[in-house]
Length: 225
Image 1 (cartoon, rainbow, N blue to C red):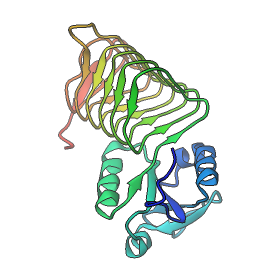
Image 2: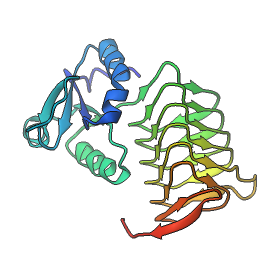
Image 3: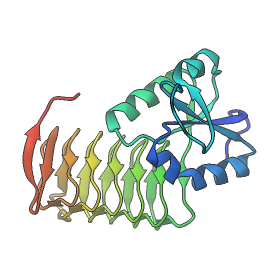
Image 4: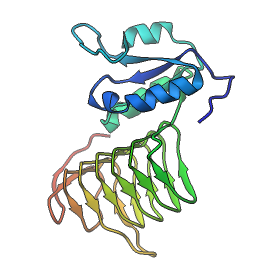
């Protein structure tokens, strides 16, 4: 991704300084080297935070000193928090960037929204639409004819088979498998759903539900949104 000079600033701001930030550091370093940028990590409070991987700034310092046109990415798996941060950054004039590992595989007719992080050995095959601020962790794949909403998180080794429609704000745990839908009836994952680690999803998942197990079954329902 080449950054238009109209938007180019000296820094890339990464929100979050947890495990995912550390995991995507090679992507961050490469992007910044290509664009001639420095990078810093934005956290709620820097007091007592040990993070030897880059400069830390507090959320309050960021908001007081930022100027429109800044570049940002959000390395936070929590879909609700990621959405809130994205909305605020865009309101402040921020420009989201995509981070894509060299080892990510992408075939024909795949559209990816802004703010995505596509990790090493992840894959999207063909005829796929992906929304904004998608996280696709290592060894996860999306098969043909899928639609992925905004603020969706795929943990490592998620298997999303063909003709699946995933709504906004969905979190999919590590090793989960989503069965393929059909041409006239795609398998549907409702908004705000959580799919537990290792779950095998064989049928539609209602909105705002948590499903676990093989086959996946509903264990909780909440109104987060």
